[in-house]
Image 1 (cartoon, rainbow, N blue to C red):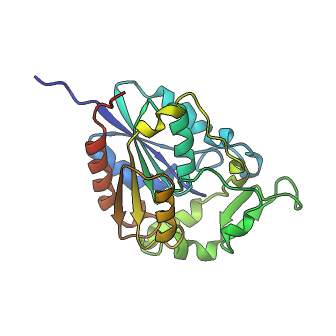
Image 2 (cartoon, rainbow, N blue to C red; image 1 turned 30 degrees about the vertical axis):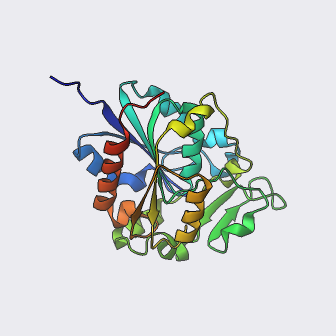
Image 3 (tube, rainbow, N blue to C red; image 1 turned 45 degrees about the horizontal axis):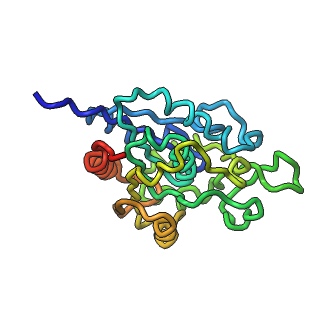
Length: 257
């Protein structure tokens, strides 16, 4: 008999203001496809007890993800999937665990490495800010304004999912990403990890032209596209499932060291 293929283990990382809950459709579909799945709540997200205005370091924000990855058995191939600003956390994990991650998937995700604390204006008028360090300091948290959430994030998604999200969104620890540092013992290994970028062509938040800039910033192994809004885990879960399984089948072979 031939060698038994290694188990694929998908680790799902949410974006701004979301939590592990946003992956509920994809997690179910992946599990039914016979792979392992873990959706993680980053600091201050979902059911994580952290307070967004008190999480002021990138390390603290990412601690749930960084604590999780070393616990995954060596015989499981880690497929790290990140949505939106979760791409920043994915990059951080790659620097720390480059040898342990078999595939990185950026789902309409941020690729560049951090934001400047003076860039509050770049967020536009779609946000409510928190100022945990005082009104004269840079904002420490950000939350999508309720009246713009559907237009920005879920315009092609079912009403039920948009309503659910409006009840579960939490402030994002904006202060944690100022001058985010990307260093780790496996920094030299990150270019060995296959990377797939999934573009969302009807995205009202991270518009396609901005996604293209992300792709040019660090060209991935492959680019896939979806004709969806910013949240394909709601608007096109079966299509997204197909792309994730396709990518993992293509790129989760044995890596040449």
